Image: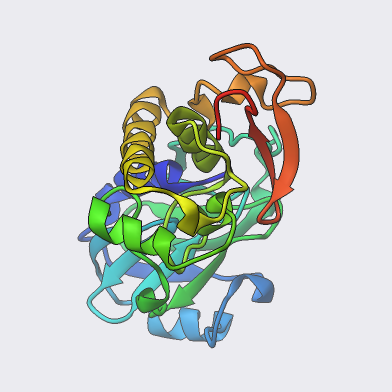
Length: 259
């Protein structure tokens, strides 16, 4: 389940392709091209272009070329392979098989190497010159004041607001549950109901979650994660966790200390 931390791992793994020239494009799956982009356009426009940089906004990985920008999204099960190697061998809640039949998009480079998206469920996608303005500020760098404004401007459930990529980019299901658990906040509360001290506490918890789980190895390494199952108990106080749908996502939270 790639979230901000996994996409940052992909960005770092892809750094060796900067400076390489694209030789060919593999785009066998029409479904995998998004927006107005087509497989034929990818095969025509990208060969001969050089990769000049790599960026990440939330869950979107951006390859800057000396022509168009190539946007890569990974959905729930997409992994990035660079020069035949995977920086993440297996994703939480995805298949443990490693089948090249799941290769949805690829670049080969002149002289050496390749870059491939392997995605069992086909929920990711590629797009030329994606509209970056549709994404909110990155969760890893947003400061307290704009973070507070994001929450204060919505009556949506707190978890749903944190996962709205147009408002705050990068937070997925696991990271959001962990941050709210650490902050002691109920995910079903209206986002605009938080007092100033609660906003600050959540901002600290989110940044701490990203820092700690990033060093541990990914979004699936949270303290709450082992208890995210039916009948699971809160690692903090032993209370049975609630399991419910919030913002369209299965949510685990503790009714004892999350208020």
